[in-house]
Length: 116
Image (tube, rainbow, N blue to C red):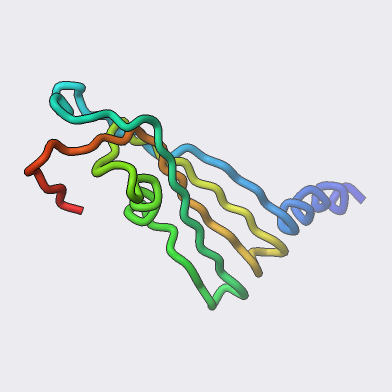
């Protein structure tokens, strides 16, 4: 009976999992953006899904999340923070992984091109 009671939490955790975790934080010095126009706080997210441990669709990359954040509003992000979210169902038969990026958008001065 004790074994069954100990097994119940394990089985429920395999049926549905929802995990949010911080990634990393990267910050430049404010002197690095001297002369640039501050746009404000921007964020972008990108997600991908997998099915039956074999089919993987989407793009959860850091670069795509940054592109979604600055799309048409800024040239670069600084003070970048990443967060990850993983949600899975029934022993990872269906899993969603997301990458979220938050930072301060800046526009480069005229005549300077970014290396995007």
